[in-house]
Length: 449
Ligand SMILES: Cc1ncc(COP(=O)(O)O)c(C=O)c1O
Image (cartoon, rainbow, N blue to C red; front, side, top):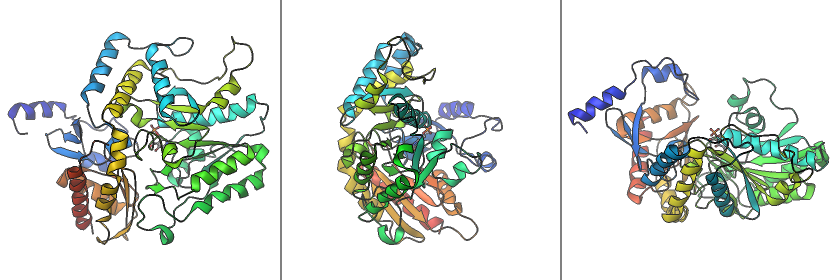
């Protein structure tokens, strides 16, 4: 990688002032003193501006499930940009939007048949919550306004998402949030669940707390419950066995809509098109984003069951049924990228591939057990969460040092939240690369002991 021309073009790509960009979810001053700059990517690797390869242990941010810069997706985006740059989705439509919606509905389980498009996971969550509220309203149950989330839940950064979410730092700076929100307890207990592969045996009973919340507020006031089938951003908490089915049963008993936020679990991460399929539980509304375009063009959406959609399709036909939408809902580039991505998932059988790799991935992750400071390891699908003991001088410092060490010295991209390392590689990862990834993580853990 040290050809003179490679160095020349890399140098040209380096910014000379990092100040203007206020980086999201990043300690800006620390980053700008010691930047981690990524210049290009291909398949399983990122490349730094000076041409160093970095194995992508996180599929970007849980989104590049088909790997990076895949030729068919790149070509589809290029073709689409040349053919139709933009068309309004309000009152007009373009063919790829309808085609992609049909393809997504066909992948989704049960009668999850209708797709509302937006541009991110946060918008998908707000869309789902708004559909749930409006659904009860149009059916004459407008008193159902309460939304139930879960402690440690991450549902993006919109006001709806942080209100039902349960990550304290994402909430405490931003005022009183939505009113009428309550939270289920989170599902993690290290004493009962440490070093579990897949769904923990312990914890299904925590779903029964919904009964307490329902009794407290009365079912006639509750619109929806929203959970991630696997809580990802908080540090990888797979659903306990039977937990989601129990939530489904309680929601059914009281006419409450169940929303699965599948922004990271969708499109193969847990070995199925959606986690709903893995768990055999069909929610009323399901969000998606990230993997739909393998991270190439922003896109998100909410998939709703037929009875929910049908409830809106009444009244005079010239009247808008749902007063909601985004300028870039079903953007042509996103639709083209989505269609090409779904083709790739199908042609390369990537969801089944993830399912087949799951035991090997879990074995590799569990080899870290016993290393200094490793408190717990959780795996499900192609996801691993590794809890490290916090350093006495500050929570999060050890994992942050691990991320820096991995990137700069070992050529590996890992994700950290608090003192948890999350590994979620693209679904094209090979067995050798799984070995390489966990081998490097072992070295990193030793280095930050
Ligand atoms: C479950 C879940 N919901 C919503 C979001 C928000 O997505 P975005 O960052 O695209 O707004 C995320 C992002 O990680 C997520 O994991």
